[in-house]
Length: 546
Image (tube, rainbow, N blue to C red; front, top):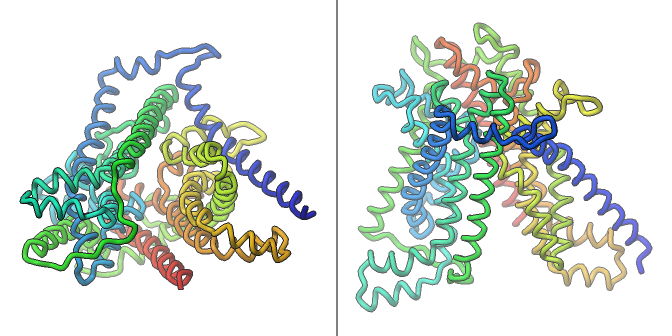
C-alpha cells in the first residue's frame, strides 16, 4: 500500500468537509432562516403569512402576473427558438458560428445590460419610443425572449443535429408530407430537448429580477421584485419570507418535473453517434434561414445596437461625453463614480472566482470519485445545484436575516459580496468540471500506478492536464457570472462597495439626460468586459484542444 495514499485521502476529506461547511454556512443556513421566518413565530408554526398571500388581492395579482409573464415569455422563446434551432444547427451557411455567438451574447450578458438595451430601444427617446411599450408586459416579454432565446436554440439544436434521420426519410419515401413528417417523426425525437429548454426558460423568467426591476418600473411587480421591495422599502420581512417560500416551492416543482420529464422522454429518443451532415441550401431552406436571421437581427441585434448608439448620443450630436463623465460624480447622486464601481465589480468578481473554482473542483472531484456509488454521487451533485434553484434575491434576504450577529456579523463586511457571488457561480464550475474529469481514461491512471507513480504524481501527470481546460473555462464563467450578479448584491451592497450593475440600475432610476447617458455608457462597458471574457474563453478552449 502506498504510504502517501492515507495522507491524500485525508486531504480530500478535509477539503470536501471545508466545502460542505462553506455551503452550509453561506447557503443552507440563510435559506433555512428565510423559510423559518415565514412559517414560525416565537418557535410555533404559523402559516398565516402564507395564507395572507392568497387572501391579499394585491399579492394575488403579483403572483398571477409572475406566472403570466413567465409563461408567455417561455412560449415566445420556444416558438421562435425551434425554427432557429433548425436553421442554425441543420443548415450550412457562411457565418454560422458568428450568428450562434451573437444570439448567445444576451444570455451571458448581465441582466442589467439587456434591460438597459431595451430601455434604449423602447424608452421615450428610443427608436420605438412611440409605441409606448416601456414598462409594459410586452417590453418584459420581449426582453425575456431575447435573454433566453439562445437556451432553446442551443439545446434543441444540439439534439436535432444528432437525431437519427432514417425514420424521417422513410416517412417522406412513403408519401408523408413535410408537416406530417414533422409532427409524427421529428417532433417526438426532439421533444426531450424542447421540454428541458422550456422548463429552464420558465425557471429563468419566473425568477427574473434585474429585467423586471428595470423594464417594469415601480408599478410592475413579480414575486422576485416584491421580495426585494417588501424587504428594502416596507421592512416587511415576514411577507418577503413567505413569498420566498412560495417561490422555492414553485422552482422545486419545476426542477422535479423537468427531471422526471427528462428521464421519461430520454428513453424514447433515438440518437446518432456522430453529427449529422449539414443540409445544403435550396430555395425553401434559404427562405427559412433568412426569416430566422431576421429574428436574430430584430430580437438581439437591434437592442444591443441601439444601446451602443445611445451611449454616444448627446443633445448636440455624437461624442464621448457620457464616457468621459464616468470618472466624475457630477449630478449622478452616486456615492462612487461608475468607473470606481467597475473597479469594485472586477475586484469582487476576481475574489469570487478564486473562491468558486477551488470549491467547484473539490466537489467535482468528489462526485467523480464516488461515481461507482452512483446514488451518493447524484445526491452530492444535486445538492450543489441547489443555488441554481433558489433565487439570488432570496439568498440576499437570507444574508440580511442570518449574518447579523457575532462571530458572523458580515453585513458591513467587504467579503460578503464576493461570497454571495461565489455561491451563485460554484454550480456552473461543477457542471463544467464533472463531465471533463469523468471522461479521464482510468486505464491511464492504472498504467501510471503500475509504473510506480505515487497517487500525487498520477494526479499531476494524468488528471491535472485533463482538467486544466475545465479550470480555465470554469474560472471564466465564474468571473462573468460574478461580474454581472445583481439579485443578491442588491440586498447587501453598501455605498462604498457599489458594483457596476447596481450603479447602472440607480442611474436609470434618476432623471436627466446625463444620468441616462452615463447608464448607457456604463452598460456598454459592462457588455465589453463580458464579451472580452468570452473571447478569452474561446481562445483558451481552442488552445487546450490544440
